[in-house]
Image (cartoon, rainbow, N blue to C red; front, top):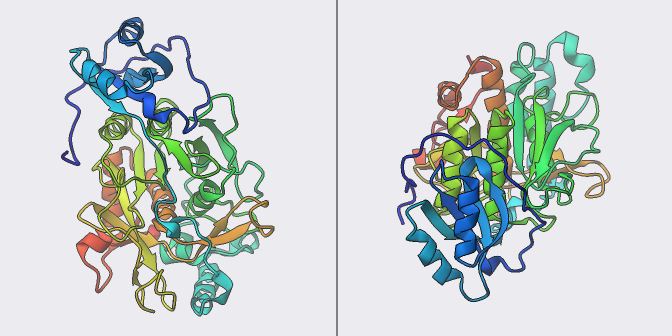
Length: 426
C-alpha cells in the first residue's frame, strides 16, 4: 500500500454527539475489532444500523470522523471487513491492532546512565552557558538544571521575550504525572478508558512533557517553552501499549479542544491510513503535529512518515562513548535513529534529562534516549513559533525551517532542514 495513500476527498465534520458506547479497552479481543470510517454526513443512527445489520457490536465511536469501533463475532473479522468495504457509505473498514508503540525499539524508553558518561562534562558546560544567556530579571528563577538539549536548541536565548505563554500543547502518550512539581497540566483525556485518569503510570509521557514545558520554578529542570499549557492525551497503558483506535481518538480530541501543537513520541512500522485520515482532519482544524522518527535505524516510522506530521530524528551530543547510542564521539545522528526523506528536523535525543514521576525516580528526573526525546524539543519550539505569531501548521513548519541550520556531515535524510535555533524564530 502506498504510504501516502489518501482516503479520498472529504467535506465537513459531524459535530453531533450521539449516545456513548465507550468502555475500557484492552488487548483482549483485539483480533475481532474493526475500525469503520463512514463517509462524512452519514447519520449516526444509520452508522449503527449498518453495524447491526452486519452482526457487529459497537464498542466505541469518534463522531467528528464518522468512525465506529465495532466487534465482529470470533473468527469472522476478515469476512466482516470485506462486506463493510463493499458498502458505498463506508470509506474504509480496517482491523484494529494493539502494540507497544514506544517500545518497538528499546532506546526509546531505557534510561541512560547519565552520570557515568564522559559526555556529562560537556553537557554541564552547556547548562552553565545557558544560565549566562538568561536575563538578569529571570536569573533568580533559573537555579534548576537546564538540560543540554534545551541549550542546544538555544531556547534560553528566546526566553526574555517568548516562553510560549498560552500555547496549548497536547502530549499524545502515556499521560502526564499530575503531581510532578515541574509539570502543570491544564487538562486532558484518556482515550482507552474515558472514565479513568489521564495521569501517567509509565513515565514516558511525563518525560516528553518536561522537555516541552517544564516550568521555570527553581526546582528540577526547565523545558523549551516553560509557559506553554500542557494537556495529557493518554492513549497508551502503563506497559506502553495501545490500539490504533485510541490514537485516532486522541488525535481528534486535540482538534475538538483547541490544541495548537500535538507531540507524538510513538510509532509503528506499518502504514495506518486511518490514522492519516484523523491527522488530515486535525491538521485542517489548525493543529501542528510533531512525531518521533522511530528507533530502528531504518525508514521513518508512521505516523512520522506522513506529510501531516513534522518528523524528528535524534541528535547525539559530543562525547558519548556508547556505540548503541552514538556511532562515534562527535555530534551527529544517533545510531538508533530512523532516517529518510520524511525527516523535517534533527533535535537532541540522547541522554536527555527530563521529568519523570517521583515513583519512577526519587529525584523526579531521569535521562532517556530515543527519537521520543527529540520530538518534544521540536514540539516546544513549535509552541514558541506560535507564540511569535505563526497561525497555521504550514506557517509553523515554515517558521521552524527558517530558524534551522544544517549540521555538517549529515545528509538531508538524517537531519531534514537541520537543527532549529529558538532565537531565530520570527
